[in-house]
Length: 414
Image (cartoon, rainbow, N blue to C red; front, side, top):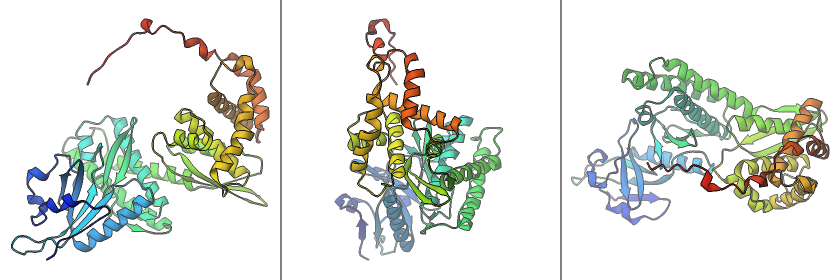
């Protein structure tokens, strides 16, 4: 038999691995000591130069199918492990054929659920873990991916600023469709409910689950969280023209649920306006980088998120979502952002930085619109904000002269 290695990028070091040996017998000199989850197949972590790869021994056709599926999921920007290659034509020294191997990149700083639970997770941490799985499942379903084997074991978790992000690991049973039917989604949820409850019962038997935690209730909470997210993300709203504040309200709700709005589309008919929002969870710093590229404004991440939300809403309200993004951003800067920040009286400019003032004006407009029941022009919101809110703000510049020697400094080394 001839050894065949298919990989997304040439890597000659792959030839040095002992492919003629069954994966479970690979010598420790090639292996990386990392926690592994439960798998129906033999899986090993392998050191290859500066990187670590996960190698899974499976049947040839399944390896090819999963490799292609993972590549598709990565193109869709779905949180999943990165496929690295497939190895076919393996055989022992005696000529006995061996199964193929699927190779993926090890997801750095990620852990399987059993490794996390072995650290005696606090109840609130365990809840965040389940929330992360619900978010992952929603994102997969939005892309038309039917998992077919939803479980904690087929997921990796990475700590993310006090929360967790979940990544798909095993895609061998998955199917990618243009759109999932409600029946397909519910089938996946039924699988999730049964698998998660079973895995948690196993943890309870080993003494790793909180004493009062009910595996079935925890499993049901994942499904409940899923439905909450799905309804918030896919539901449509109809309202009269001019009620732009409701767009802001919808974006606000999605942000509170942990989603950033990457795309906002609006269609108009005789009866009003229908909003369809597509979410996308983005990397840290994404908003500030995007705003800097589009407008030249260098602001904080949360400020950038708020400004970009307004920019996207401006593009939708002016029916310019198909226009060049940089041109729309230039017009928004000239017609919306700069008129607001330049209208602040000189004696009040030291209260807050311009981006924070703009953010607060947007917040003020939202509250005014909510009270009035209709959209408030930003000019009216600005006048009211400058008259009633900004004068009460302290001068930010006044704290710049604090003597740092008077401030306690605590050094901590881990």
